[in-house]
Amino acid sequence: MEQRSFGNTDLTCSPIGFGTWELGATQYGEIDIDEAVRAVHMAIDHGITLFDTAEVYGPFTSEELLARGLGDRRQDIVLVTKVGFVFHDDPSIVGDAAIAGRNASADYITERTEGCLKRLNTDYVDLMLIHWPDLKTPHEETIGALEAMKAAGKIRHYGVSNYDVPMMEACQQFGNLTANQIGYNMFDRRTESAVLPYCQENGIGFMAYGSLAFGLLTGALTPDTEFAENDWRGRGMAFGLPLFTRENYLKELRVTERLKALAAGYDKSVAQLALAWVLSHPAVTVGLVGMRNERELEENIAAVDWRLTDGDREEIDRVFAEEGVPTHADSKQMTDTAKGGESHAG
Image (tube, rainbow, N blue to C red):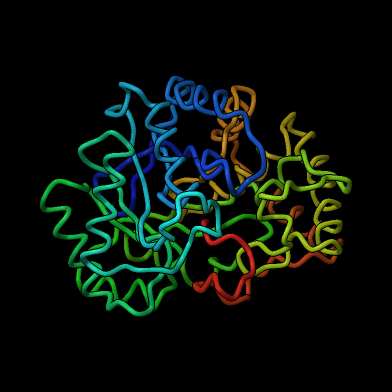
């Protein structure tokens, strides 16, 4: 499989990354955990080399299950995790309710990194990200701590997640970001105006989460789909956008149905079309996707070599326009989850 570089660094990975938010098992409805863990091993066999997790997924469960799935193949992959959330002391509180705030102070993220290493059963992380901006801690302090952990061999590279351009510029004064991880898909193009160009111009890798629009572009959702009580999508909002409110949801499903027909003309699925679209942006290093079984794994991998034409992209935009569904390309990027009303994870 093709390998892509994270900006100007020596870190490389497959264009598709294995996203493990669902392995947290508390924020994304019900999943077959054993099957999902087996999928980790299968993904490596199929050429996927990047695995992305975070301590907040669960919290902590995703890291533990990923370690179980990796087994003795840890050295074969690029391991990414994230810190920066504060959690309630009561272990019975799970999911979003477990989050008590944000903290990217030096002592705190250094302490949390040790916990990540223990849960992931590894001596180092290839890429450590600050999960969401902590507006109370100076960037100089955060980057200084990341640089210290890099020098100590605890992490190979560091970056951020859900940071806007001014925040990245501030971080760059004190170090060198390897990556920024933000949501990016056909329904959410907020990063196109500023973040993606900045990353490309400054040699910073871009990791797209939500490549399949949190299920909207899988073809699996219907007007009758009911989200489980612990599924954040049931609250309507998706990182500041009302993608899952009833009126918008039905319009988006109509877009998906039309995109299915476009994909079928190439003997592809709508999920493969969505992935190919994300991966075709020149600033994107890797598109993250949840993969719960071998069927989803093989479907996602088949999108890697698909090169969309300008005509394909124009047809996609025409479908959105005709259905009256916004792409939010001109909307402001969200950096404060407290205003979104949905999951804090991402």
